[in-house]
Length: 111
Length: 113
Image 1: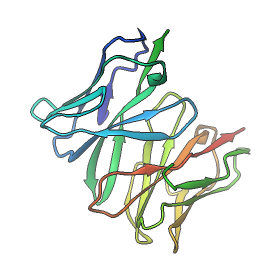
Image 2 (image 1 turned 180 degrees about the vertical axis):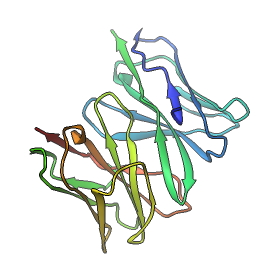
Image 3 (image 1 turned 90 degrees about the horizontal axis):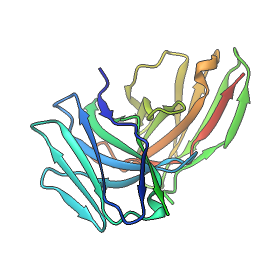
Image 4 (image 1 turned 45 degrees about the horizontal axis):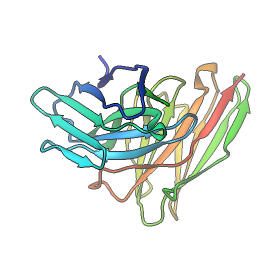
């Protein structure tokens, strides 16, 4: 079983739409949670950390449900520049600080 | 930009060859991790160095090895290359074991023919 599961998409949405991504993680000992964004043929870049209390950064809202082992990302008022792959990431400290990535969800925002 | 640099950008090798990939982590960071990202997949953890000591390893065979250097540098060596080793190899640095956020370099795209 994969440590992190997420819907690969693709999600094709019009500009201005609201889109939600979800993922689940298998190890209840996971300690930290993130969403990374990856543009085509580029490296992953940290979008935001995810906290149980929920956190917001502009048009982006992330939520963590530890009981259900579920992480979400909501993007409001989608822009063309939001087109990318969004990676759900959990950190498990196995001696090392080991990041486990989902396969990513591809988003295309259409004009 | 994260301040993490990697070289070379692209590399083409043939099966059975050996390759060395280089990473310079962000100044002040003392933890370097290496990841392999195959096409259409998320990155997978290879190993991590904390202050030049290996402190964790993912599910990769021993032919994947690392060499840490002072001054925030690290090499990834892969021996006896196989076709499935074709991937984007990413280096990530963080400020310490107690700090969770990792910042990625641009990666080295390795093609094995």
